[in-house]
Length: 182
Image (cartoon, rainbow, N blue to C red; front, side, top):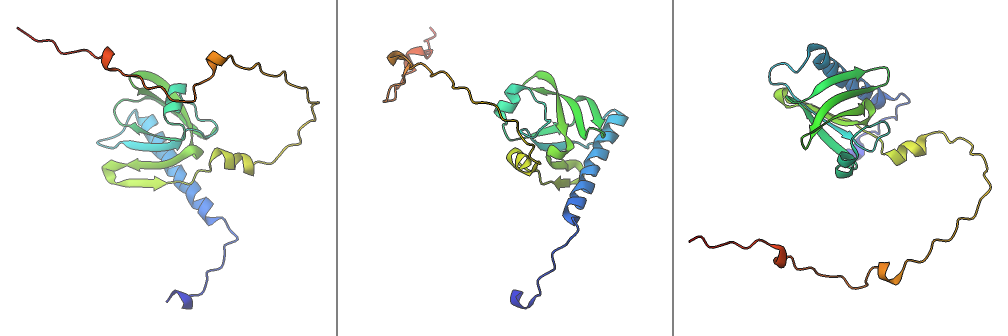
């Protein structure tokens, strides 16, 4: 029974962090291999999920608006200019989003999952949310700035204020009606 089992002592060494760091290095090596060899061998392809709100992630605004917290990209046939920057701890890659080519930048620390379905290999990572990153960062003393009163915002005109009751718009008038063919 669970009652009889002694509680394990709490480790004073960060084994979990070390393990996660080592496994992130597997992702770096896999991406570096692909960048060095000009593509993925055989049927290999990568699914990479990452936090879009993580500091240092660079995405087009429309993609970030569509995926405000997390996105999964696929590196298989249509990607280009894969660059690994181990010193900066990130990778850059060219992808198309809705047919629009763009280059994205992803810090390795933002990656939440990595998978290669060809060989059924996958990893999951813990990524702190941005507010947790800010909370754990050392606070710097802020210089005191004298407060200046902000000018009062003008009241919106009555015609600019939203109605209290919702408006229903019928779209039937705008729909194209089928025509009879003779």
